[in-house]
Length: 548
Image (cartoon, rainbow, N blue to C red):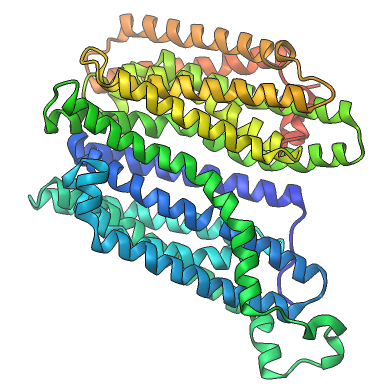
C-alpha cells in the first residue's frame, strides 16, 4: 500500500509536540519584530485582520480534517483501499469549495468587515491580503487529514513548520520593505499578512509532493489497473457515493469545528468590542484606541505561549483515561485525571507567574517604545494563562470521558462572560484596555470552575484540588519570589536605564528562577515518575532529573 508506516499513539504525540513547540517559537519570533516594525497602531490592523481570518481558518481546519482522518482510518483498517482514496478526493473537492467561498468573502467585502465588524477601517487592506491563504489552507487540510488517517503525523508536523517558517521570513521582509518605503501602516500590515499566503503556498506544494511520493500507489494503482486484483480485499469494490462521503465528513466535522470556532469568534468579537467601547464610551480617539488595542495584541502573543506547551499534552492523556473508563477502572481514571492536571499546573503555573512578576522588563525588552499599558496588561494575562491551560486539559478529560457536549456549555458560558465584562470595563476610561485581560481572566476562571464541577459530578472517584495544585503552586511561588528578588537586586547594581541593562537583569532573573523552580519541583515531589510517563519522552527526562 503506502510507502510509509503509521506511528503508535505516543510516538505520534511526541512528533506533534515537537512540531507545536517549534511553530510557537517561530510565531513568537515573528510577532515580536513585527510588533516593533508596525508599532502599536499598525499592529492593531494586523491583529484585527487576523481575528477575521482565524474564524474561517478554524472552521476549515478544526473539524473537517479530523473527520477526514477518521473516515480514512476506518477505510484503511477495513482494507477498503478504493474507499480510502475516494474519500480523500471528495474531501479535497469539498474543502476547496469551502476555501473559495471563505476566500471570496474576505476578498470582496474587506471594507465592510473592517468598518462594520471590526470598527477598524484601516484593517481592510490586510483582510483582502489574507484571502488567498484561506483557500490554500483548506486544500492543505485535506492532505493533512489523509496522512493522519493513515497514522502518519510526520508530514503534518513538517508541513506546519515549513508554513510558519516561510510566513515568518516573507512576512517580516515585506513589512519592513513597505514601511521603509514610506507606503504607510495599512500597506505594511497587509505586507506582513501576505507572508501567511506565501507560507501556505509552500505548505501545499510540500503536501502534494509528499503524497505523490509516499502514497502514489493508492492514487494511481487502481485507476490504472496495475495492481493484482487478488491483492484487493473482497469488499473493496464497495465504494460509498460522493454524497454519502460529503455527508459523513460534514456530520462528523461540523460539531467539532463549531466548538473550536467559539473561541475564534470570541477573539474577533473582542477586537470589535474593544475598539468600539474605547471610542464610543471611554472617549478615546480612533488612533488612541488603535494604539491601546495594539499593545494589548502584543501582550496576547506572550499570553498564548503557555497554552502552546499544554495543547500537545492533552493528546497523550485522552487514550489513557478512555481506556481506564472502558475497563470500569474508575480509580485509575481519576488518578490519571489528577496527574494530568498536576502536570498542566507544573508547566503552566511557573510560566504564568513569570509573566506576572517580570511583566515590565519582558515588555520593555521585547517591545521597546510600546504604550505604557503593556506591562500591566501582561501581568493580568500571565495569571489568566494558567486558567487557559487548565481549561484545555479539563476539556480533554471531559472529551475522553464521553462528555464532550459539556465543553460546549463551558465555552459558550465563558464567551458570554468575557463579552459582558469587556463591555462594562473597557468603557470605563480609568480602566480602558485593561478591561479586556480582566475579562479574559474572569471568563477562564469561571470556565475552569465549571469544568471541574462537571468532572466532579461525572467521575465516580472525585478529583482532589489540594492534591493536584498545592505542590506546583508552592514551587511556583518560590520561583516567582526568586525572580522578583533577583531582578530587583540586579537592577540596583547593574541598573535598568538602558535596553541592554534591562535585558541582562531580566535574563539573570529568569535563569535563577528556572533553577529554583526545578529544585523546588523535585524537592516538593510536585512531579513523580508516574506523572512523567504521561508526557512523550517524559520517562527519560524524569531519570535525567532524578525524579522518583
